[in-house]
Length: 122
Image (cartoon, rainbow, N blue to C red; front, side):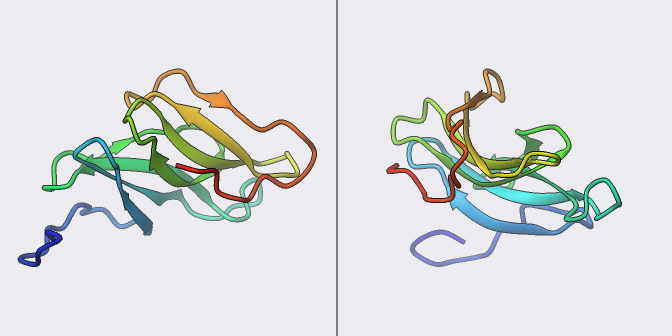
């Protein structure tokens, strides 16, 4: 829905759960998290990936990959990076990651054994 009101635009047409949409501050994109695989013995909370689309309902693109939960995607103010939290099955803690908007150059930003669940300044 436009900020000033108006018609709602549906962005996804699949049968998976989508949560927490966020508008990119410097790109005409929305990002959100989607359950792309249901819970299983090896992934007890399912597989969640970050996805994006243009705000007008363009093609949906999955921007993260792997057997993990990738959540809370948000763009940097300058639009140069996308940040997200990721819990890889078999690892004990959430980590903060960054990647290019095209999905390349994923970089794990936090490595310490403490929880990295606080949002960083955007």
